[in-house]
Amino acid sequence: MVHFVCRNIRFLDVLAGRKDPAGVRGHLLLDGKPVPENFKCMVGYVVQDDVVMGTLTVRENFAFSAALRLPSSVSTSERNQRVTQVIKDLGLGRCADTKVGNEFIRGVSGGERKRCNIGMELIISPPVLFLDEPTTGLDANTANTVLLFLKKLSRKGRTIIFSIHQPRFSIYRLFDNLLLLSQGVTIYHGPARQALDFFKTQGFTCQEHNNPPDFFLDVINGDMQALKDDQTDDDDLESEPVSQHDMLVEGFKKSHWNQSLQSEAGSIFSEFKSQGGNKGSKHEKIDYATSFGRQVAVLAWRSVRNLVRNPETAGITIGSSLLFSIIIAAIFWQLGDSTQRDFSDREGVLFFLIMNQMFFNMSAVEIFINERKLFMHENMSGFYRVSSYFIVKLIFDIIPLRMVPAILMSCIVYFSVVVNNVGAFLTQPLMSDCCMLCVQLFGGFLIQFDSIGDWLSWLQYFSIFKYGMTALYIIEFKDREFCNGTLKRKEEKEEEEEDKEEEEEDKEEEEEDKEEEEEEEEEEEEEEEEEGEGEGEEEEEEQEQEQEEKEKNKKKNEEEDGGESVLGNERLEMSDMDYQSTWDFWQNYVALAGMSCVLLVLCYIQLRRMKKTT
Image (cartoon, rainbow, N blue to C red):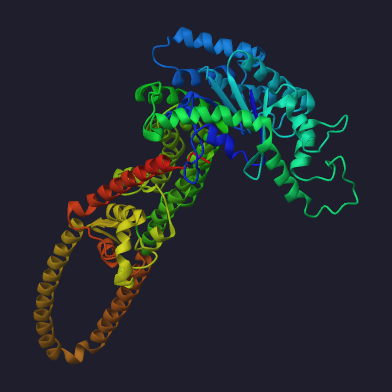
């Protein structure tokens, strides 16, 4: 067992192959040879923070690790036996079928959770096990139990390497070897029981009843409680930390412990150089233990269980969408289509829904952020490929948690508002991918395209908002007119115009007949002028009254119809939308599909490029 006490745990990451090689000098050898490229998959690494799926039981988490990290040659029964054996070795039999727990689910205790993390790595029986602060967050008794278990593992031939924070003496005496680092250099490296002897040779004696680990840290940091045997509290200690540190470094270099290490390391390094140094490794490259298909199947199994057992996530997401859609449907219930105000309301519904859906789906990135630590650890440990994880997240998390709520909202709102056709219902869910400020500004609805400078107008072609609203506008407003209390098609309008022309011709004929009759009447009137003066005046008064009534009725009809008619095509042209051909409509779908594919590819690339080392 090797133990590290250091102020910076990056050295542990270097040994485990989890440190970014940039800026690191030196050689990391395994049995005198360079470590294989996938050395991190050979060994076990227990991180400080718990990285197990809280909605699964202890047994299910172990089974997940066994299903992905053990080779396909291991049968199902053998994997189950190994899971059972690890549970027994860790003393987790009583909580084996208990959920680990998370912020919503009460699960196992802190010590059991830590042992569960250790068990995830022990499934593959690693020859070397690294642990980062295994006692952090544990009480003294639980920490002692965990370290006793690690001691038993070391006696079975495994190398246990870990860092620890302020261990008590009962834990310290379990250590076999001790490495003390300060400011990047070695203060002591050798048997743990001989560490006090080294400090005594440097003039520092540990007082009785003082914990040795605390004493070591006091000396390294130049603390007042760790003074030399011949030093008093009244001495000037301003320069003591630096000089004391240098003295310890030089003292270890001259000690027999360092000479023994240099002799052993020198022979190994000489053999390494004689074989060509970095030219290659005789270790075979370690690949993933399971195939791509099996990784997808196992990850899908875990994702489904996590979704079913975590109703807060799915329930709140879907429930909030349903509630919000019901509110919108109630506000715009059975939206009219007869006046200019109805036209404006319909525009508002389309704009509001697209904006809301785009903002709602921005939270899809949280799915990856919430599992970032879990993904990084499992991917680094060789559980699965990035592509397997990405596909499963897309199918079993993004679709049920983002697509399903969007479709439900679309169903409720669209069929409540009563849109033109089902095409709008199928279009709206496709609009809910992402939203940025530039996407909104260059969508052509907050500002017209011809009002944007030529040097910026090209950005409209990268706007998801533009393509979504264009498709919905074409569906709703192409060849439509809002007037006379009904929503009319272009064909109906042409028929009405023909009827008006026929009516005008009939009126002209009637006027000609009236003129002839008037001429005859004038002749009769001249003959009977004296007799019919009284009657003519009465007829003129009646005609004037009829004209006044017609004008009043005309004004009344105009007020009821909402004024002048509104043409949908004019609104499309005003927004610089191409709508004449079929391709003008379908090109928006093609653009949305293409942009969605590009965004998904970029997301996958970012997952692969994510820095998984410290």
